[in-house]
Image 1: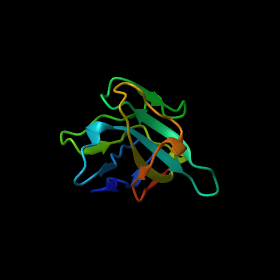
Image 2: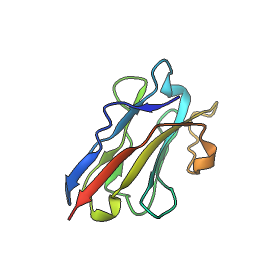
Image 3: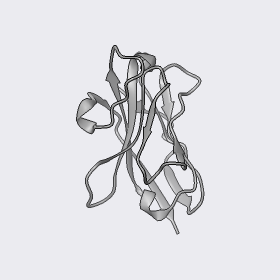
Image 4: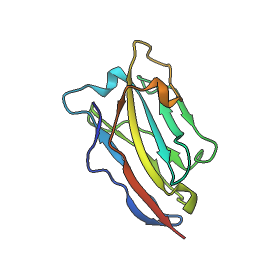
Length: 127
């Protein structure tokens, strides 16, 4: 089960940066494909980014492409979402998710593909 650790969310000004993270204590995330999702108030959950198990393939939503990246952390069981050039439309609760998979280079961009979810961390961007 993934859980947010030192979430790195919170409040940022427009054009600023944040870096939420999540970890899976007792679990090796390198055996999982990873994903970040967000849900703004009154809206459906949407995919932000996805990363294959080996990290070679990524997916980014058009709304965050060029601004967000999903590098793996130094620890094997930590994943980050580096968010730069934030704007007010990025305000949402952000969730990390993991999917155990045999396939090294497949990423998954649908929320229903993921079985383990973090608790979510609030990100608010002020203009």
